[in-house]
Length: 128
Image (tube, rainbow, N blue to C red; front, side):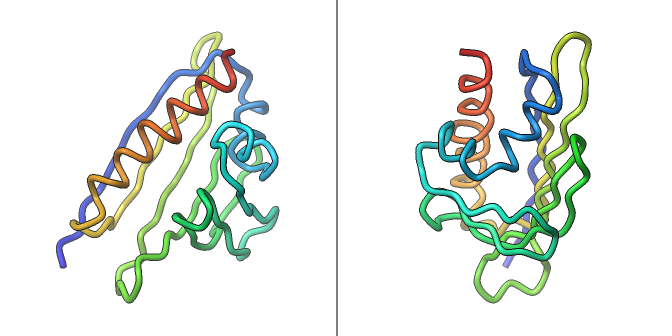
């Protein structure tokens, strides 16, 4: 099975700590995603978003900087790692996604999810 990588980023008119809270607090995630979310507050815990469509394990939290997640794709040998980084960009924040080892057969859906249901939804929630 071929694996692919994905990178994207977006500016958000909000403070870094607010953006970070929006991507790590399950209640905030539910507000901007519209779906139940489980997001443990410690590394090693299992997470779930979009009613279980996306699930995996939190590998690392760096307060107000980044979240590193391992996404589960069945029996895949190479771990699929999503790193969500938040940093100050002028008067805004920037969110960057670096997702590695996405199975070819899931790639288009994952890209659509990141762009339309994660980044755009997060930006709209925080700016409106």
